[in-house]
Amino acid sequence: MGQQLSNQYASADVEGTMMGAHLKSPEEIKQFPYFPSGTSSILSKTLTKDVWEKCKDRKDKFGYTFKQAIFSGAKWTNSGVGVYAGSHDSYYEFAPLFDKIIQNYHGHSPQDKHVLNMDPKTLNAPAFPADEDSMINSTRIRVARNFADYPLGTNISAADRREIERKVTEALAKFDGDLKGKYYSLGKMTDDERKSLIADHFLFKGGDKYLESCGLEREWPEARGIFHNDAKTFLVWVNEEDALRIISMQKGSNIYEVFERLSRAAGKIEAETKFASDDHLGYITSCPTNLGTGLRASVHIRLPKLAKKPELFNAIADKYYVQIRGIHGEHTESDDGTYDISNLRRLGRNEVDLVQDMYNGVKALIAEEKKL
Image (cartoon, rainbow, N blue to C red; front, side, top):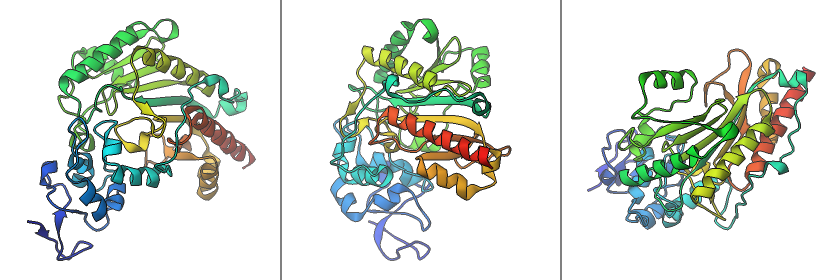
């Protein structure tokens, strides 16, 4: 039986299941989901009755159900997106929903193709002159990757998660030169190791209610860990939101050097085991917003004069497809005029294109800052 909805919601006297924190499991979504008024998640905008009727009883080839895919955003109605895939196959089995989300978020239609390119030789990123370099505190580029022969972290078994950790750590153990380093298991590290990783801002932790609700934190912290090189300029998170978050970073503004290191390391891992990808969606990720490249390239940069002219600041960012954040993360403000500037696009453009977006956007922002 559907519950009668009260007048505080957008629709009254209709049959359906009200979404919210009271939900304990995906199976409680018995009928068409209704969201509290004011909900603005992409899930709430794209989950129409037509999509629900087509998908409600579907599951992907690994058994991940449509209701599991939408449960995080169903329970936590303040989600930005609210949907997670259970496998590569989820994007096609639940296509009536995912196609709409991908079109909404990325502007990428079901017919569009995605081309991969991690070749740093095709990046045009000359060194910044000294006065511009002094404005940039640090540079960081990361990609998300998953493995072709396994479900995603939302639906992976404990045994398969351990198998992924074993394969990754074996590949990382072969790294030499500037990539040589050490792997730290979340469940086995010492207190001193944990304190060191926290001090370096390398440690990731559990307890995220959104990730818990989609199945990403099951058996926490088993078979999860962190690798970093000796110079602390290269980092791999294993079995967090995706099987791999591969991260290259360093102080200063040398974007080419950071991307070259990332590309080389990702290639070494992919030579050992195949990443999940196709020519429509690019690299496959748990959250549909990361599809394509799974890449976020960013700098922390001081722009105190532009900070006082938000309309101009945002206009330049929009022109160059970059996103402005406070340095403490999304939706934060800057106290001292230091901002995180990153590429906005993920899907439909290759990795080099997106690093180029960031470089070009930063150059344009610096040029305007110097005029003011």
